[in-house]
Amino acid sequence: MPHPTPFDRVYLDAESRQELTLETHRIDIARGGCTGAVLWNPGKDHEIKDLGSPNFVCVESGVISPSKSLSPAQEHEIEITYRVQPPGLVV
Image 1 (cartoon, rainbow, N blue to C red):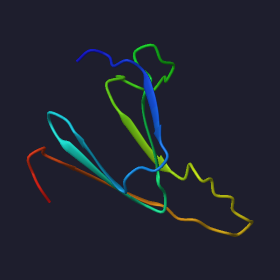
Image 2: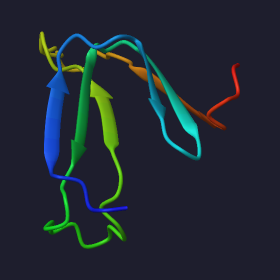
Image 3: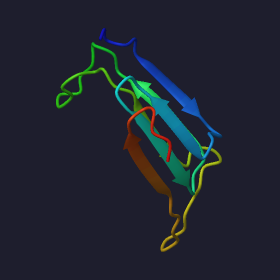
Image 4: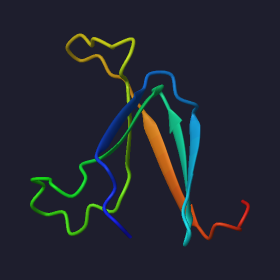
């Protein structure tokens, strides 16, 4: 697989469920408490020392916009669930 071109995409109001389908498996991502998602890959010319291969897509979830300011002792919870399965399996 060739190294992907570096990319960094920010989705401020992403769906609460996302699915990445690859040749060998499917990744289902379910989120609660946040609406933001970031997909990125540094490409082949990166400085991440512990990264064995840049052939990946990183999917991060979080509170992006509107931002959330918390007072001392105030809390905000997010929940992220990842499920990996063969691409043809429906759960």
